Amino acid sequence: MEKIITLNNVSKKYKKNLLFKDVNLSIFLGQSIAITGKNGLGKSTLLKIIAGLTNPNTGTVKKERKVSFQYIPEHFPKKKFNIKQYIQLIGEVDGISEKNLEKRSKALFEEFQISGMLDTPLKLLSKGTLQKINVIQALLNPPDILILDEPLSGQDSYSQSVFIKEINKLREQKVAIVMSCHEKYLIDTISDTVWEVNDGEVISKRIDEKLWYILTFIPQKQNNMLMDACKRFCIEKREDNFVFKVPSNKVDEFINIMLKNNWLIRGMACEKI
Ligand SMILES: Nc1ncnc2c1ncn2[C@@H]1O[C@H](COP(=O)(O)OP(=O)(O)OP(=O)(O)O)[C@@H](O)[C@H]1O
Image (cartoon, rainbow, N blue to C red; front, side, top):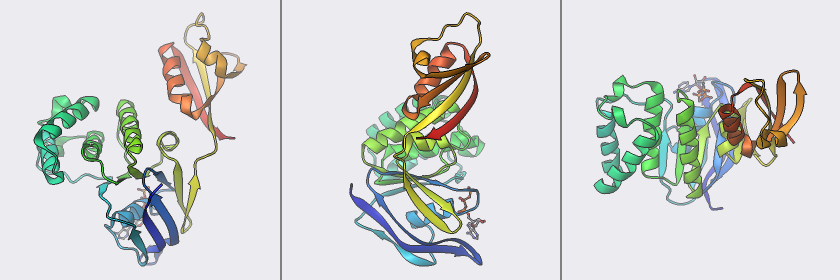
């Protein structure tokens, strides 16, 4: 993998508040990094440093070559434009041809189910819809590095699944993804590396351990039979509760099948082996 960004001894503090010290990390094309950590420890600040929007107090962020960035902030600047005008403007700034922009944005509007609200001014949209516009904006013209601050905040579960699908397409195109994130299942689905911000340090971990989900379901109808998919993963039955152990790469599909077959989800936990 080609290295594109190197952080050398990066430290950041606001007045006496030291967020992190001597961070030495690299970003590679095609890598997908999730920045985790408790609220207020510096995840957004680290993203801004990588994007060149905030300077570190000490250390350097070295670009190994010319790279294109797309930074998606957590909060959206509420402009006077409506959705369509805003996306057209972004297309012009990015130099996307009119025809291409029309085709690509139409498909994304449909996918994110916002085709019916294209004339709505941005200032009237909910936070979740604004996040969708943010993500569409990034997908229109994939950069070398896509930086996302809390990309799923406010998004409904359907949009989350569209987002996951689109981000995985970008990973296939070797876009580097760096996002701050609290949702464990999202990290598991789209990240290969976690940077954990804690106690003034940023620790990098590869996600190479296999993750399993322990899921508890009960059937809604007494006569509902265990279908093949669940027979494979069932590890225990406690009264009406069936406990399943499912590998992370199968968990979405498994939950969908169960819900379609009228099972109710009662519990979910994660374990590493
Ligand atoms: N421009 C600034 N001036 C002064 N302090 C700041 C500034 N930006 C951030 N901070 C402080 O730095 C700390 C880290 O903020 P940051 O937004 O990076 O955290 P975070 O981990 O992204 O938080 P969250 O999970 O809540 O989004 C916070 O205490 C915040 O108040």
